[in-house]
Amino acid sequence: MKDAMTVISERKSVRKYTGELISKSDIERILKAAMAAPSAMHMLPWKFVVVSEPDTLKQLSAQLPFAQMLEKAGTAIVVCAVTEEAAGGNEAFAILDCACASENILLAAEALGLGAVWTAVYPDEQLMIAVRKVLNIPGDIIPLNIIPVGYPAGEERAQDKYNPVNIHWGKWS
Ligand SMILES: Cc1cc2nc3c(=O)[nH]c(=O)nc-3n(C[C@H](O)[C@H](O)[C@H](O)COP(=O)(O)O)c2cc1C
Image (tube, rainbow, N blue to C red; front, side, top):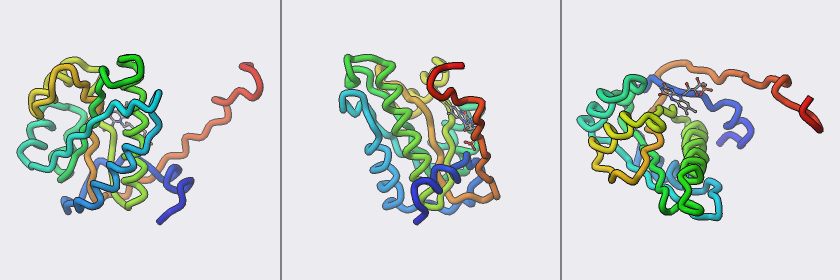
């Protein structure tokens, strides 16, 4: 397996999949990585819905204009933020913690030779309502994103986004 720095620099959004299903053990490894994420006050305010039923994936892609690839993914993980379980019952902490878990999912997929992409649900109220409806998610739970995971079909390459202009050494200058 690649070392952590290589996985981080080679991670990219993958939106085309072969259709081959990923194994349950790979899904569990990915979820283990998700739950290893940092969390404010160690509150771990996250839940994960694993969707592999083709009709459910189809229903989700029908609702999400920027997640058409869901239908072909075979598996998708919906990262859900639980505000009442977050530090101070604060929605922002729930979202931040779940964003950390989401990045771990993307990195774990890359490490396992799989492809994944963050598709947005939060903060769009209409998308959140639509996803809750398809998956029976309670109204107080925030579906942050949907991350399809599959075997990459294409040749997507990671972009080099490093730009020293974004760095201020010492003080803002
Ligand atoms: C908050 C967030 C929302 C995103 N929403 C979508 C989306 O709805 N559909 C999609 O195809 N990609 C989505 N992306 C992926 C970005 O387009 C992608 O990360 C960006 O273009 C950089 O490319 P890279 O991931 O290959 O480095 C999202 C990424 C983030 C962090």
